[in-house]
Length: 634
Image (cartoon, rainbow, N blue to C red; front, top):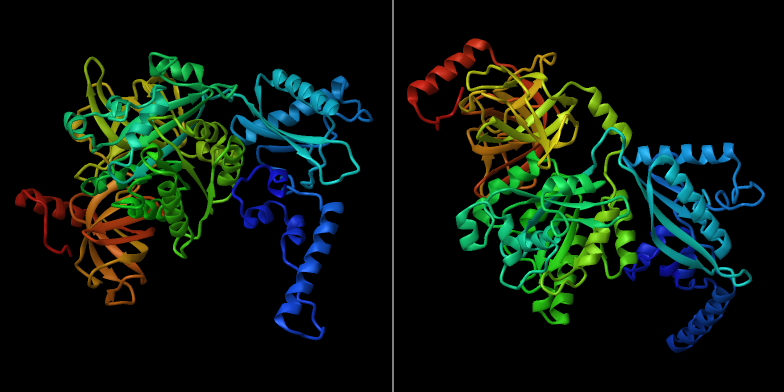
């Protein structure tokens, strides 16, 4: 019953109930030891202990501790309401005009904090006490909330309703959880990016095909065919490149995908919330592509797909480690449950729970088995980085697919409106991740706007080139999720048409920045790193592939400050030098480097300036050689 009061955690562990409701703790703990009593035999002590437990359980049944939620925060998109929407004393069943305007303004604030989404907990005090409302008061509350939503142009969806019966003297009282959604006036839709990770043949592309196409798979991979970009991917059934798929939800929480819409433009027009899936490669030989997708496209969340019949195998641990190293919140989907017996699925889940609880992960697994669990998982997952929801589903039978859709529908954005506004106030900086040539359009670049605002017709500079220069260009048109868009805001991914700009001058890893920024180039930089694994010793002269955002280039270790060499698990400040061309880096940017079995993570601490003459000599030397340098750079 405690789990039911808690809002449906569904995990079945006292740890989760205690974390939600600290006041219930006394009812979950065992009896005290009773110091100072004469110790007798073990049999006598056990009988006394049983009698004490029976007496304690009787008291618990008659005098239950009222359950709590965490106290309401002034900021954020969650609002508690107990009597505020229904109290006859405050005249809110038929509220005055002034009071109704006040409530509508409060709703606008919550929607702004949640970037278009707000959750109302009706029947909950501001301090988190679950008091509940009578059936009549609850109906009046929902009616008032619906009027408030209509006033601000939003829609409401009842997520769940629960009974609160901790006080047996009271009549049955209920609490309701309501999702309010409205597309912000300055945006087309709310967009969340989810990177899809997992071992090869775990069912990643098939799952995305089922979610976005609206049709179940036939068991032989039919659902994934629309996601592949190359012939060899269709022939082998293995993803080797990065592809994007979209899943929309309208303001009422209904799924919008290709089963109802013919084109991506129609999905965008009908959706108020969009989930953009970044389908990454699972095979180890495409690991650099997977790392580039995680570092460059800045996903909000990561979905790790694990096959129920194979369990944790291949690159599963490596992908989990990459997501955790880059601090991307991760949840797990156990697929192909239709191929296995129930015991095999449970063994895979136990295996995942064991790995997640290891000291290196320190995660709290949360098995999702009902719609109520999915609602709770979405809210706790966004609030705490340690919570890791686990779904078990099938892309063939459709088992538990609806739970994953409920989770995506309620999943809130990580950044609030204030953080978004601060990024938009900065100068424009667009990361170039992809380069295309489109007939009748010209050169097109795809990527993510890191900061600022980008508009059609805006003039920017792009670079650095191999010579370390930045070139002027003009943005023609902007497309976001395959539909036209006039304005691009910080954190959004899009493609920009550059007209007849020479494509040969562009490469992945460049940035397009405002003319006011006066960008600088970097050949050398220092980073504070931790060496995750190395077969021997990591020392001066070692060459690694460095990933910093959308930058991916081989660099040489120039020096290790304070140390001659580095072993697995050790930390140091290391100076790196790019060997091919200069790059544009930001202070504090996350860094990941690898070479064979060598792996490490860290962040950029300083950018070391090189003289212009030294850079020119380096460029000229490489031109004469006509090949990549393998020698150590001085």
